[in-house]
Length: 516
Image (cartoon, rainbow, N blue to C red):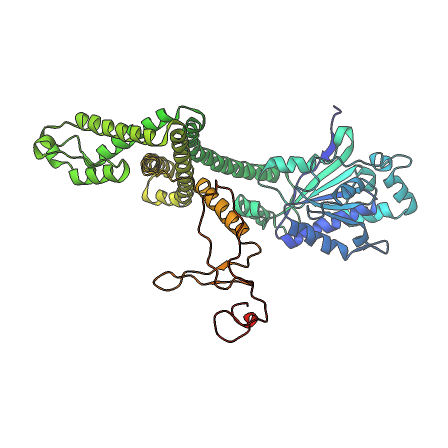
């Protein structure tokens, strides 16, 4: 690496943004008259467009600066590379946001790199206009011979993070190239208004600075850096809190994904067995308080819950209820639940039974987990209000998140078992419909050429009306066994012509009656 030759000047601070923007425009014009490329960094697209409009109305040596301005604000993606490639040419003015054009080097032309050399851009400008040096000393108080060459960086305001300011300064002075950077601030900037604006304003009042006058001192620069440090610490604490909230969800996510992997690739029967034990434990905790005796337990609620989920009707006499313990009751329920699952297995068969288990558990886990994520988002939105009640929002979030997660696991166990035990084995509709479709096709082939059309059943007796060309008086053939060979159908009555009288006796031609 080559040592940095960039010159980082002290910040210029003004009272209002209007004064700051006016000073930025004058500085850009001064550097443009010397032929140096300028890069203006802004914090927003609106600021970059504002500076471009203000600068576009000015003229230098009879030429409008509008033609020399390149705006790089991440809106023109296709032309960004071309704009960056031209940003190091003499007299170029590039106005860019912080995000636009990052990661690309601005290459300088030789006359910009050695601006004071024999063919340097400043040397040529001073030779072309001998009064330029004296005019700059009188108007700007700067001697062009002392002006550093290379890319000139102008910052429109300080950012909350010092890292972004250093990235903007780092656009100039790459690999030993010359360059210069300077920031223009005002007391109305967001950073100055929130941190340190009043203190610096008092300093300006003490010094008696008037409108348009600037303050540039290392003490002020250090005060601004301290304000940036406070903002960075505040943002860091926000990110740290967010990570703590995310850790809660990560722990829950690992548990749910582990169960899902077990349902996909593991022993699904063992997983369902765990769901049964979990559901029974949760149900007994809800309806049977171990601190009291069986006479205070909610037997009706327990019976309803078991019947609703496990399809178990718990029959216990009054004497059995008084003598049973909680462990005995749990073993009794688990035994009946296992018997119910075994009956399911016998009814479905091993292969279909395992498919049923996997499908039911996976579907319920996915549905309940999505609902739980929505619930956690709603909880996080309003948990900060707990601080008004002198409670730590993070502790409250952890507590309520744990309660919601345990409730979700209980719903997963109950819904999975309910789906498994209530599933019904349906006959294969497609297989049973195939013979009927074959019979229909064979009946249709039997009637081809006969003009037979069987009408819908009418009347209480279910009599059918048969009509067709040349088939008056004929009846539909009876269904036959599809395994038998088809016999040709022979006409029992003479064929009726279209213009012959209709055999029904209506006196009309057959084509106007039953021959339609």
